Length: 619
Image 1 (cartoon, one colour):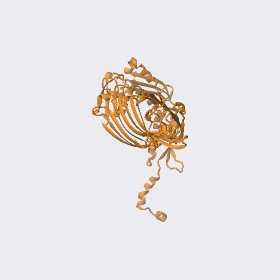
Image 2 (spheres, rainbow, N blue to C red):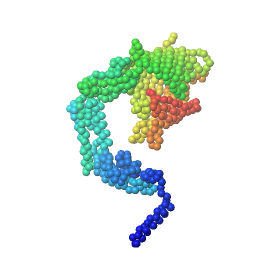
Image 3 (cartoon, rainbow, N blue to C red):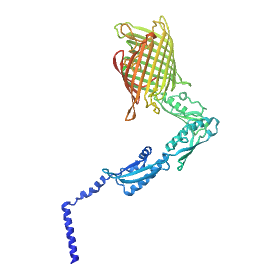
């Protein structure tokens, strides 16, 4: 009876509990049972990582720890988290080794996140210990550079330029950089086949010292031999030799090959050029491989543009790289602007061994110079030489100009002609074209000639111009990131008897985007009695501009702000020069096609604001 009573009592208790449960919470449907695990998983979160270490160490660990890849995973078991903790400790030690800490203390533990956050936090506590410093550096050379007497200077340069010296902190980045610099210096001159045969960083973790040993094998010394040219169809191999200017038998210099490649690319004859030395050929006369892709024989370019000086612009330019029967390049261009229409052509011969070229050109032009409508014709013939830093030009020029005033109703015209011999050059030492931030450029022209007509008169024409940048940054700033002062100046004159009748195109005017801002193009000249403006025999102009790079959230942008003051004068006598001033502010943008200049200037003499826009940098 007792056992039966106990059994009946348990059954009654079970029924009571079951009824209570059913009344309070009805059993879930099958669909709810199916979604319950998913909902539970969605509420789970991954883990967070907390790194307690010096700032430089913390940045490296935050960026490179393998543990970072798993922090958002929500299905990791406790065993997997334990494994990741162990792996994180090993990874942290390896990363600290790249920073020069070889005896660190690394503690990795796990704890629950503080409310209201959920999940867990893996905490990494790092005490890096003393940094390892370089104790000894040993550079060893093998190959020709170790035995050749004339290689001593190159060995000394590599050793002197070694960047990771005794006493400096050792890091993997500094070690790799030092090795790569030494290898570049080895292979830049004489030894293109040079290589690193041994690189050892022997670390003493107890004393926190690093002993560095690097062995460089130069291989044989190379001299350039003949050119092996690929890709020629329309142009002659002689043209490639004249442009490359690589003399067989000279010691190998990587810089010479790069310069040759640049000259071929810039010539216009080739769309692509690659110049390398073939180290499989005999070092005494190694073959220079020149691979080319020729430009199209003819090219037609339609141009559309605008400027605040001349308004809308439409141009059509045709290039023929090899005129039949002559072999010269011909560039013909027609241009139409608001105050200037022109039609011209230029014939240029292939360069000789010294990069001099014969040039002949003709130009027909109708333009507004001051208040004069000038129809001019120009013929020029001579030679020119262009290089990265210096341009030279020697030529004879014929000018003819027919001038009529646009400020009066007079139908009178003036015809003037001249013949002159001229020499011009330009020197450029800028840091980065077309976006210079330091350096300077200087150009000059000198010509002598005579007017043509019933009473010829001799004259001398000269012009000089200069532009420079003065950095205003603090120590440690690069020239591109610091503010600077841009200055330019132009002086020009004609030495001749009073009353000489020269073509207007030989005289001078000022004003415009690249002259004195705040005034229209060629608006500064000599004002005649009838109010018209004509060109003069002397010119002086200058500009000072403060350029300041623009930063957003501390980051350097492609924009700059400017403040400037310009001044210029034109007269027929030096003593009569009286400057007209323009002041203003503007912006510069490093566009993909060159610097875009946007300026709002106030012409002090005309008491008027004027917007100036210009694209590109030329000197």
